[in-house]
Structures are given as structure tokens and as C-alpha cells.
Image (cartoon, rainbow, N blue to C red; front, side, top):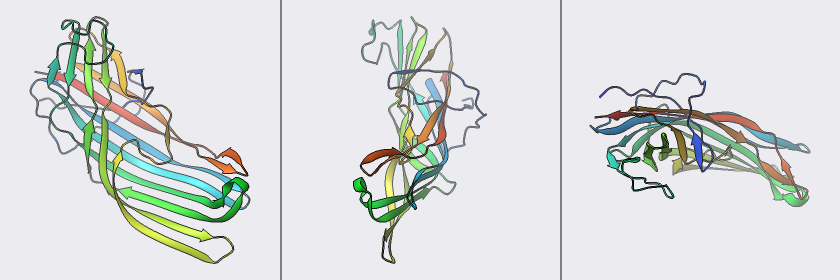
Amino acid sequence: MKKIVFAITLFFSCIYVQAQTDTLPKLDMPSIPYTPKIKKGWVGQFVYEVHFDGESSGMFGKFKQYYKVKADCVHSGFIEFPLEVRGAIRVNQPDKNNSTRWESWIRSGTSFTFSNVDVTVKSDERTGALANDAITGSIEKTTNYSSAGGWAKGWLSNTDLQIDHTTGKYTFAIPDLEYEQRGKEQFITTTVGKEKKDTIIRDINSRRNYKDLYYVQMKADWAIVEGDFKPGQTEIVIRKRLPLLLQQTVTNKGKDVKLSAARGYMDFYVVLRRIG
């Protein structure tokens, strides 16, 4: 099989996102420990690349309340579509049983993905009756998890490909993935008016989603990307960038206050090729 080359895309609305190639920095596809095994169908590698380094904060008297996120992550895996369905697989499709019009492909093969992650999340929040600003102390929290330059094992789900030859469009269900990575959490509780700090450190080993960055908000959700498809086409390229926002809202004297904003991005890239 020819080597498959790759790059990036945007989350967007829960409906359809128009696929396109944006002017983005070149991305070299990471080398992951898996080789596609199918002989016929559609196959390709995808990548999510996350870069975020920012803080959402505000001053309340002499107290600074903040939420910081620093993340550098690469999530990748292969998608194999060897199973063809002659007809539409999505709901509410016109003429859905027309096998000439519709060509649909279902995933099979590996479900494994690979995540190279380095994430640190910090916050310092006031404790006490926040609504009337009766501060009794603060809790500093630090969460860190890292694959230390290696690959954390993950699992692929929720992806398929449907082609409408009548309209010349394809719809691609964006791959979802979860992975496992050990980490640590530290809590430091400070009591105002007393020279007292209590520190707790614990190990964490949770299953995480690639979109999970604690306080970071995705500007939009996404599920399906749509793009043009020409007769005889054997390659589908999708590349987009999704803005990420970190901006917390806190209660101060009974009023909601928006803290400062910080921004980053997540890139998604996939190239699918027809083989056989």
C-alpha cells in the first residue's frame, strides 16, 4: 500500500461543516505503531493537534482568581472503511435505498488510537460565601498528565463515510477518541487569617476524551463534515482549525463577572484514499 500522507480540520456546528483546505502550517503526519491492513475500501490517518497556553483571571481586592491551561497534544490513528453499504446510512436522506446514488462505508479493523499529551491545569479559587464576598480562604489546584513524549493508548469511535453521487457531495462523520493517561492532582487549601495550608497530592488514572481540557471551551461542537466529491475521485482531504477559548465566569457580591480571556486552537487533518 502506498504511504498515506496527512494534515488538519475544524470542529463546527452539530449539523454540517463545509470541508476545505485552509492556509495552515504544514503538518508532518506522526509515525504511529500501526499499519493499515485492508486491501479494498477507504483508508487514511487522522490527526488532532492541540496548542493552548493561557489564563483567565481577575482581581478581587488583593486576591487574584485564575484558571490556567497549558496543553500540547497530538492525537492520531488510522481509519479503515472496508465495508460498503449500497444506500444512505444517515437519517432523513432522500431516495435513501438508491444504490446508484448512494455509496456508504462503515469502519472496521483497528479501534486503537495514539495520544502524545502534555497538559497542566492550574486554578486558584476563593472559598466561602462568594455571593456576598465573605472570603474564608482559597483552594489552589494543579492537575498534570503527560505521556512524556510517548504514545498513550486510545480508542476510536463514531466515524463513517457517505457519498451522494447525485449531488456530488460526501459527508464524513468526524472520529471521536478517548485515551488513558496517568497523572497527578495537587490541592492546597489556605485559610484566611490563619497561618495554615493543607496540601493533598493524589494519583489520577482516568479515561479522557481528546476534547477534554477542563476549563477550555470549544467555540462550537461538530459531528459531520461535508465536501465536494467528483466522479472517479479517490482521495478526500479535510483540513481545518478550531479556535479554543478559556474564559471563566465567577460570582462576586452576587453578580456574575467574566474573567479575562485566553485563546488557542486545535487543528484537525485527515486524508482518506480509496484502495483496491
